[in-house]
Image 1 (cartoon, rainbow, N blue to C red):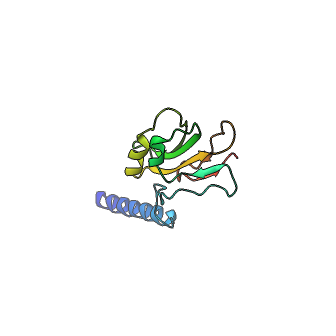
Image 2 (cartoon, rainbow, N blue to C red):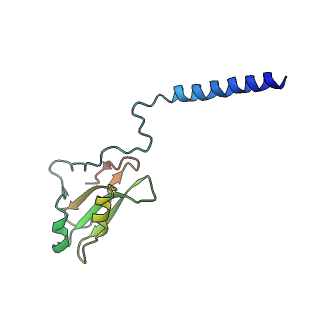
Image 3 (cartoon, rainbow, N blue to C red):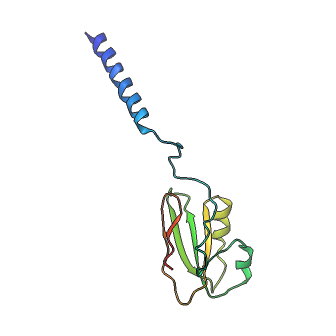
Amino acid sequence: MKKWLSIIGAIGLTTINTTTLISCNKENNNENGEGDNKPQQPPKDSNWKLITDFNWLKDNFDNKYYFVIWKQSYSKEWEIMKFKHNIRYDMKIESYIKNNSFKGLYRWDGDGEPQTPTIEKNTGEITDWKE
């Protein structure tokens, strides 16, 4: 009787695991939501500008607002942070770029303080630029 129960149990577990695996049906198997880390282009004719020359930030304090999209080492979710570039260059940006935890740096060229854009936390994609 014990043998029959263990055989039935093994068949049941195998069936459950196989069913779960088949029902997943995930196309790219990218469970972490990590795709490419290429920065997203701002909308055409907007007040947003993609910044690719990070060395420029070290010596040029332009008193403008910047947004950086990055991922903390302890987190799987992307974050967006706003800062005003008027005091000092933040070396954290370089370390995030080196660690591949950096998605993009954007400058606001409009008037006043901008609203923080909305991002998709799993991909880092900006979903609402709040122009």
